[in-house]
Image (cartoon, rainbow, N blue to C red; front, side, top):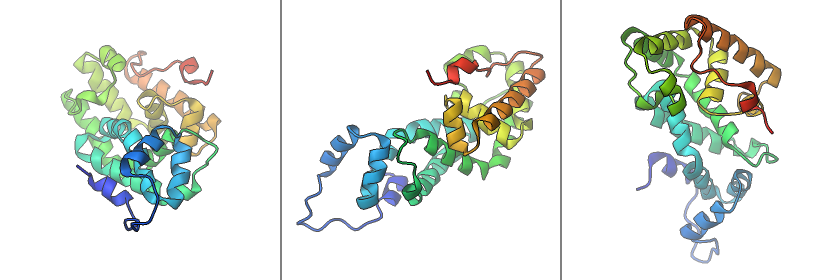
Length: 224
């Protein structure tokens, strides 16, 4: 079944009968062999090719949005993010084969439009200890945030972070981006990423009495 977001990405009329473009199945097979940059470049001439990027990355971006805003907002956020990505694809840096950091950046910007809802969600968890999103923490984090009291303090700490600090922390902890990819996503210098992350870690650790369940080792997020 075609989703609303997929329909929105097909912005051209069907090709005429004598058009020798690959079939839908052929396009999918071709996309499987291409990196993200090649797909985006191809979509400049054949817009429907961009749908392959949605198929490739929508699930992980939906999970990230749900972690930050809850499931009620995630689908709309991802749809809006891919619409913006499609509309600005001509400005993509085609030297970057992997588009996921770019897509994370766009998704994070859309989430920023809902930052009040995000903060309200963290505050609700802080009050009740109940997380409406079971997948709010990945398995490693969930194992380290098993106690309700710790989860409440963590949510309260996230609610108090500045937007820039929270974006950096969660792109690295939940998006599993490197420092370089986070800088690319947010379009800021890597030094800014490091300083924001340092402040966010310090604030979260202080709120948890010195422990930080979303602590990330620096070497885990550096390129080999």
